[in-house]
Image (tube, rainbow, N blue to C red):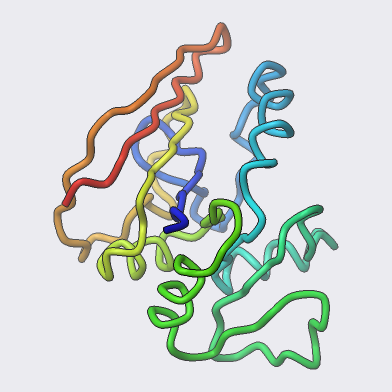
Length: 173
């Protein structure tokens, strides 16, 4: 079965974006940036929430090279974005079917709401977080407050000279 990996940067105080969705606080880390290109080769599919996709649209980056992009949205229309697949309902069934399909691992990119939904449905296998040495004091949390508790097991970690700490976990329950 293919695994779903949630990958995100997060401030030390638990936010994946500032109050207005900004992420300019994410510092460049050359070692991470060069490794990411190689790391992305393990994925062939990216799952994206509507709010994250809105940011991608504003930046004119609606495609992720080498990955099939699937956007979960009740408001976007497929005809507006033919370069990606828009899923408007049955997210759980869609992701469960993707996990059973032959292929590489699946990247869950961005948004805390889609992460929370798929995690609650037992459809996230790996959580990879790069903790950026900044305190935002507010913004979009890694998980919305109403999220249930989920146990994780540390599988890898690395500390970079920039102060970034990368943590990889398996979801165990």
